[in-house]
Image (tube, rainbow, N blue to C red; front, side):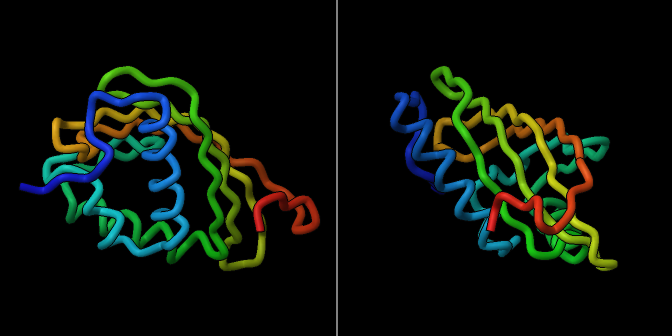
Length: 137
């Protein structure tokens, strides 16, 4: 049986650890490895896209990082309950034509009993920035 520690119910320290592990994984930009933190039937809403299951997660992330170059993410704890975590985040990326953006947003996560994320709902807004305005390097 797959498990991804820490597992629910989450303490404050567990929630912070889960967030840090997610940040490190996403900054690695390895879709296959990242997908293993999600249940096989995980459901996402990412902006206006709906993604279901690990294969679609891998496909989504592969395409994302083909278009969002020099990606760097920072996640912050917002709140948690037994098996849910709310996160505030921002990330920066560069488009293929050299323009820089900072994306801001919130995510709501729900985990199964084995610590795999079964739901991820992300609301994200992008802001064009100049390269000298970057904060995440």
